[in-house]
Length: 321
Image (cartoon, rainbow, N blue to C red; front, top):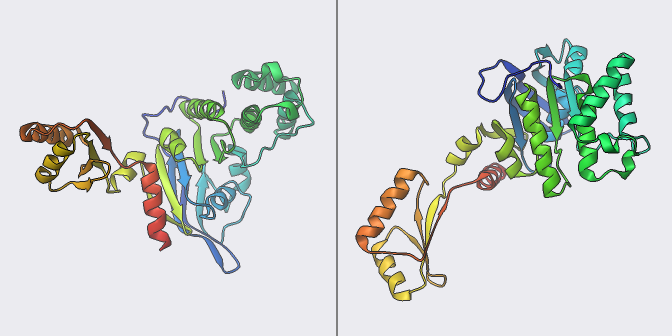
């Protein structure tokens, strides 16, 4: 399998695989990272969200030893970036925004090249190559040039190449950008399988649904700082704006509801009312009982709770002001 730390799963209490404290990086007068702190336990997904230019890719480059930080402490897979960068490098895998696949080589040749770079003995290289090509459903295309692969196949091959060295920590920098929805869901399944094997994943993504689906914890990066950090549910609870929407088709019934529900926000043209609500089952039950007691029956009732889109826009707008 891809990980040397088996069986961590998702319901674990594990030691940190990634520890970042006070990380700073500037290019000239531009401060890209302004003292950020990050922690990811073993066998979890930490997602970095943020607008373009927020510093996500710079953070990944520093943690993967490609860029030197100006200040701060970094430990990945138990290895200190400042004192043992070679040990750290040997424990990680990186899949960048742009594919590292050589289109002139076949899928199998790309894999064997990575095995050679990891100094695997020939027999082990053949075994690892065959296992990973099978795992990523690439055996049928193994003898074909990678230039003939679809975008989703190239991305799968890219991650398979990353796993040749059995990394304990993987950095995925926007791994599904440009993929169609089916290929994106396939990639999600691959990431979940890696985490189930105990691999730790640091994921940057532009797709908020992707972070919601995959991440154990999310850090929202903006202006070089962490604007907020927590589980997806914790972040959603920080943002106001949850409501129940009532839609009416009978104008007379709508006017009665307006007179009764004075806390509601009205839209006379659409004949809708919005009632503030946290979206909990208890709140919804109480509201329905109240509507029944008042004799108000809407034609349609929908519940809106803040999602990661709301979180993202609220936090990045707030910090950018």
